[in-house]
Length: 354
Image (cartoon, rainbow, N blue to C red):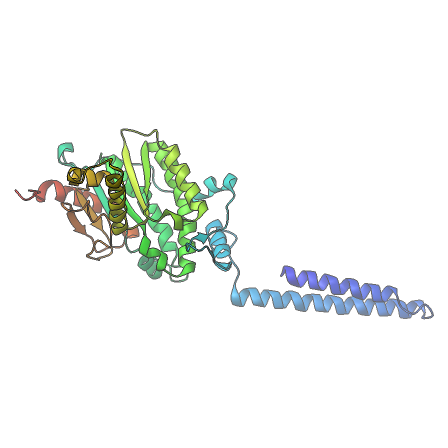
């Protein structure tokens, strides 16, 4: 519409200039008639261009200005993705002064949490790990015109899930947010996910500071993470470093367990070569001290009906209880977590080989 207005206005001005430059020998009546005719033509063209613009908008649509999320996502995906030699994704910078207010409305979740499992504190799992699977499938099913919305819904579920664990007095939660294999997804989807992670970091930081949640980010290939996401992660980690006595939330981003194990082996080998560590002193405990995640989960939850670990905490999950849920991650409800906790406390007998 704006394009039509500008074109119509330009043509109108041209017509008026032609009218004013009519032959000086013409009569006043002829000059006025010529000018009126020019104005009529320009007004007609103006209406035609405006109508064409409206028809184009109706047929093809434009990004909605009522949703800042859709506007930013459309802007991001509309730009050609740029990559570095390390295959890093470069995303559009955001306005820090407006970001916090927007993310609160986009990922707003209930603040009420209370303990409901009824499980004795001594029987609670100390560490829960989660593979948050099914966001993309959920988006395709519930948001067919905008499947990326499934990842936004999954982000909100993580905020809620962390609060549920905090309410149940679970000390440690480790979540699989983005694997090293996920970099192989279509570039447009990866770029959209990186935008989500930027906002996702802000929401978690806000909630964590309010609820005494300390956040760590575990990454085996951090060089691929865009600088804006890294900045958000660093701020989130730094501003929650003082939080103690509540929940510790480990977010695995650009993480792969095989890579984690290889990195630990390299570190130990280097210490042995320098003479800082004897070969016979390399034990399981020493090895685990060189891993990113140094506390073994008591149980793992995987959503979306898949039955595999997908390169997640392979060393640490050696004795974990496994819970596979058929629903996707955004469909996860507090009652689902409570059922897992109750099953762990009342029905799972962990003998550790004894």
